[in-house]
Length: 206
Image 1 (cartoon, rainbow, N blue to C red):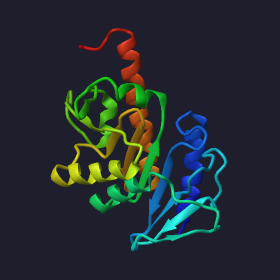
Image 2: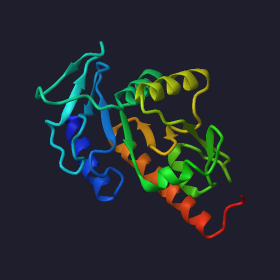
Image 3: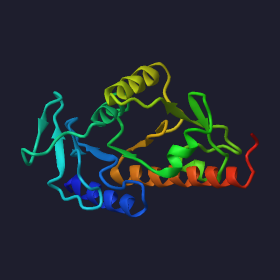
Image 4: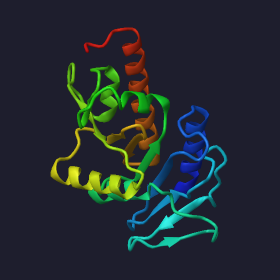
């Protein structure tokens, strides 16, 4: 069985090159069959990660650290919420891009309407001219508040797509594998980039 940390290292470098995980921003995780998961440690450059820069969170919530100096990501609670609500999820990716932050201000509502692009099919929406939105959450300095908000909202109503946006913070997606999650990050960022350029060109209906 392939160590999922290899996939996470490769994805982090890929995202870093595209400006979506600059510095130490963002975090990636992959869940194992026993319900535990590997997640990027706090304060690590995402362009220079190794397999030893991850923390193993056990099903009981405790952490196993390859090195004592590692600290859990401040955004671990977001991953915990996703895995608790979506048992089929095997990877959860959270990145910080300029476009994600910009589009998070395109509405004051709790959901961001997405344009009816062909790329929406990548989220599993197979409809002509789909009307779908991405759940939008308020940002909090106390990140566990974000995780709790995700749990509260998605427990009441599941999202239409496997993705969510945190205002002025970043996008989170989840997938059935690390490769699936990587594809969904690319899809989300393509849509965000389109939305920003469409607004700049005056193509938006608002």
